[in-house]
Length: 258
Image 1: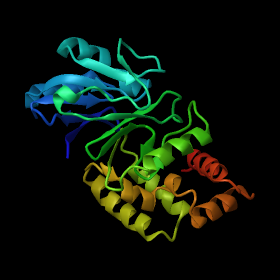
Image 2 (image 1 turned 30 degrees about the vertical axis):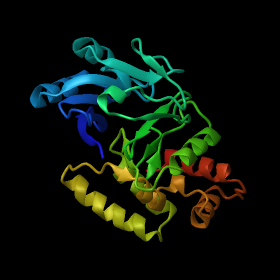
Image 3 (image 1 turned 45 degrees about the vertical axis):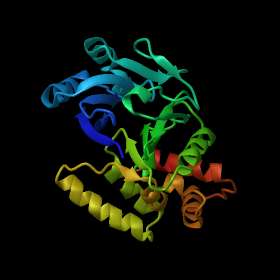
Image 4 (image 1 turned 60 degrees about the vertical axis):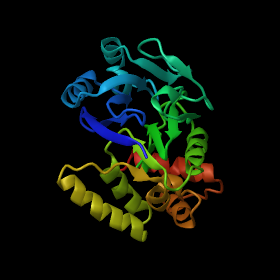
């Protein structure tokens, strides 16, 4: 199991700091949208930054990459098919992240939907998935199609159930409130919502989640469930025969949910 800590940034971003298996004094960060909190954490802990992993091109995920790479002479790995703020080692689907010298065995997964070139890093029982999968939610479709995002989530769902999900935002409470609207009789959603309210009242982090938990509470992973299909059909007022149609309806519903 990896040693992973959150570094908070902006309003609700998490930059994940991985302490490498070979030496916990050496670190790798994921999606540093802001260099300042990472720099402060490294100075406070004495951890040496060796590498930066990027999942997609949005500014709140890449804003601190160049500065950290230059300051710490850290290698940068990022999606091959998106614009990056500096030179990166391009990562394609099926690649290894190439951090074996640090004791890290991370495989690259293409997970388009939020953006077209979005990737995730999987290994050591963990998934660093950027803005593709959230706890009880998924990313907005800024560039991809519902079919692409559904396929990406299906790929993630095929990982072992005990995989820990390290997503990039603290969206769990809002997502669970929506999940409760979709499946008001889902006991796991109700219990998770109560737990999450208590955690957020203490400003405590709700992550990582587990894939097993997400399969119980996340409507975007549950679009094949009769209850989710029925809720989406009731909301849209039309028959939704394909899973992709259900997913698209639930995503559009969430986009306008208050």
